[in-house]
Each structure stands twice: as structure tokens, then as C-alpha cells.
Length: 499
Image (tube, rainbow, N blue to C red; front, side, top):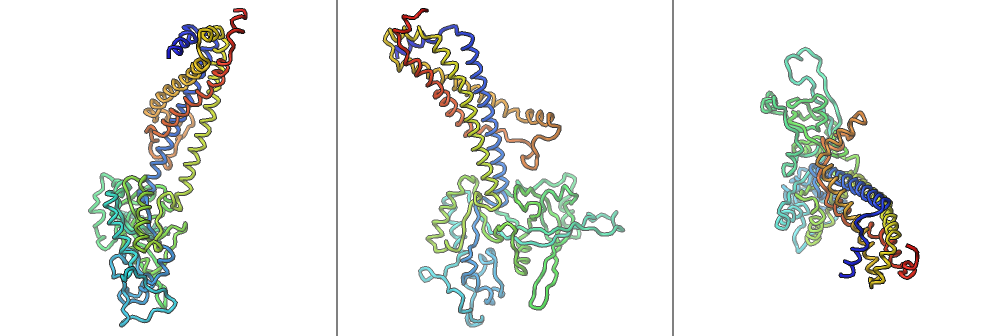
């Protein structure tokens, strides 16, 4: 340590040459700018990703349990078609949960086809995949206290909404309707984030009067927010139209509805066509006609919510293990939000963008740190005699190399701290920067439909850790070249040369 102290005293003079000081200043500025850009970009990107994930999992849940082909081809599902207790109709998961496990009565019902599979038993007990799945989910609450779950159903119907707003001033006007083919998603009251999705009602609206005035027989439904932007109001009435297929004919059926409110569909691909409805509507329509989603999303299953979506993978592993032990694993597919059909591409794009920008940032840092090499090479050339004197006094080559390596590390650390401070200041005043960019472009710099009303301004811990580790490390590596050059100097040759 004494040798290092003496070396520092000789090699770090009070006055530097102008060229060395200028290059040092440029190095610090360039590296600081890169650090500032990396932290701001990664922090905003991470915040946007979290917001999108929150919207994605608020309505769809971070974990989804859906029936497999084995479920639909099992005795458990098929038997409803020949059982009088099931009304000779296939039941949804929600209905299965409330009905008897095996509704078949051989003394009353017709004989099952010989091509059907036999019932599944475990320890001489009839396996009920639905009731067992819900029992396991209830038991998982002991391990994951914030776990919530509920079955969901998706169906489709033609929606028609009157545009007269039930006003007496329109009495003589010709009726007009907004008509749209829509997906109907059952309203999950167990969803802990449902209240965040709902848009507040207008302050001047008497909600009770709007919903109950001459509309006692209408079912309350919630529309995506784009309907509100297009003139639909709370209290407007209409109906769902769907086809009821009987043995002899196909008839149109109608379900009267009243608009109870609006919600933010988030990033769902069918968001602008997805309507939240009571369970009895989806079950009524599903009983009369089969519904298929255009993107392959299952139309019936179980949603599982957890407060921290980072635990989604842990919950999935725990459920898979429990389902395997209970003998129902083949009936269910458990997937997290990372596997959703409409979310895979979005999440992969976010990861690709972050990885690409991180690689670009490293390349820019490498270029910026090349100034460190230039500065230290100049310093070595300026201080050859001092280095020779130190070596003559007994300083080792490792000590000389360490000093120059420490200089590079110090420059990288100092630049990181300056860049971090500038990034924190920028994030706190991000709205001002966004307004400035919008002013330059002549329009909104960031579309509110994609990025929300304001950009996230929380400092990313991952970005902070990235620059704190990478920047000093690259600076240290850049300093190795001049450090090795300084360590290889021969004191005898230098001291014999002219001063």
C-alpha cells in the first residue's frame, strides 16, 4: 500500500497538460450521456411493459386453466348429452362445478355408445376433473394467500343498441341502431383488478335512474370505452341476437340489454369487440350454439389471479404438481400470461427491443471508452520520467499498471454517477421533455392509446444495476492497454534520454 501511495503522489500531478485534460473531460461527458440515455430509455421501456402487462392480466388473469382435447373426449364431458339430469346438454365448467359428478342414471337414460371411453377412477372414486380442480385451487390459498380464481365463458352474438338515448325529443324520429358482431365475456366478480378497469360514470348521471327506468327486464352489460367515445351512453338499451338451432329449424333469439358502464379493454386483440356480461347470458347462448374464437383463445376455462404476476410461474408449477397427484393433469392445460396467444408476440418484442438497445448501449460505451485509452496513453507519455523514477525507487510493474487501471475505473465510475444523476432528474421532469418533443414534431410524441396519458417515470433497478456494473468495467478494460504500456517501460533507457 505504501508503494501505491508514493506512485499516486508522483503520477497524479496538480497540473495536467491541456490535451490530457480535454480528452478526460470529453470522455466523462460522452460516457455520462450514454449512461443517461440507457437509464432513461430502459426505465421508460420497463415502465411501459409493466403497464401493458397490468392491462393484459387485469381482464385475462395472469394464469389460465383450460380444458384439453382429453377433457372434451372424456366420459365425464360426453355423458351430459345422454343424461336426463343434465338436460341432454353439454355443460360448461361453471355448470359442471354446480352439478353432480356423474349425472348418468342407467335405469332412466339411454345406453352410452360403445365407442365412448370408460369413466376414470382413482382409488375406486369417480374422478371429477372440475370439482377436483377447484378443490386444489382452494387448497393452494394456504400457499399463496392472495390467490383468487373463477371460471369464465366466452360466447358471441350480434349486438344492436338504440341511438335515441330514450329521450322524448326523439319520439318522432326514425329508430336507428348501432349493430356489431361482438364477443361476450362473462363478468368475473372475483377479479381483484376489475374495479380498475371500469371507467367512472359522468358526474351528472343518475346511474340508478338510468339503469332501472322501464328497464327491469334488461340485463346490465359493460362496453369497451371506444363505444363511449362514439356516443353511446349509460342507460342506453338494445339487445343481443343469436341463433337457436332446434331439431327442425333455426330461430332468432333476443336478450334485452342495458348499458351499465364502460371499461378499458387494455391490449386484448378483440378488446373493442369484447363485452362484459352476466354469466347467464354466456351460458344461454353457449347452450344453443358453439362459439369459436378467431385467434384460438379457449372459450371456457378458469382464470387464476395473483397479486404479484412474478409469482405466476411458481403458481403454475404448484398447480401442475397437484393436478398430477390428483390424476386430472391430462384434462387441463395451465398457462401463464407469457404463453397467451395474443401476448406472446408483444412480450417477445419487448424483450427483443430491450436486448437490442442494451447491445447498442454496450457498443456505444465501448466507443466512448476509447477516449479513456487516448487520455491514459497521453498521460503515460507525459509521465515517463516519473514512472522511471518510481521504478528506480522500487515500485513494481504491477503497482504502476494498477495506478493507470484505477484511473480508467475512476473515470467510468464518475461518468456513471453523473449519468445516473442526470437520468433521475430527467425522469422526474419527463413530462416537460415529452411536451418539448411534441412541440418539435407538431403532434403528440407518444400516442395515448399505446403509452397511456403519461409515460412511466420510475427509475428501473435493472437499468441502474446495468450501468453501475458495465460502465466501470468497460472503462477498466480500456485502461488495461496504457496500463500494460506503462508497466513495460524500462527506467534505465528513459533516465538516460534527454529530459
